[in-house]
Image (cartoon, rainbow, N blue to C red; front, side, top):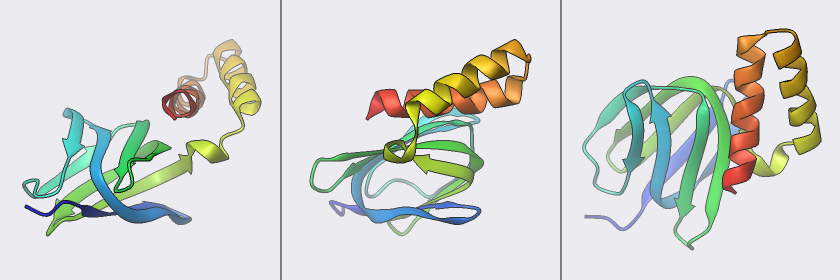
Length: 124
């Protein structure tokens, strides 16, 4: 079994992160999944939520992911998201304001996006 897997996190508009990892944790429609080197091939639908990548040097890369697909084969993991933001890119105050605005407007979709951003920042 290989000690690392290659990860590509891609949003509709850009490549968000690429590198080697020892573990990736993501939320799918079937529940949370952890993918390590040598995992069985898989194809799944991503739910909105934080994705955590444990890099080969022991660091954690966290991203807020909103929908998309996850696939794994030949020690290559692809996360193809509709929208994805690294937690370091998220403006916490802006996300908090967006959450409050979404709650006051009863906009469940916007509330979910803001909540995922804040959860991704909390994980880092």
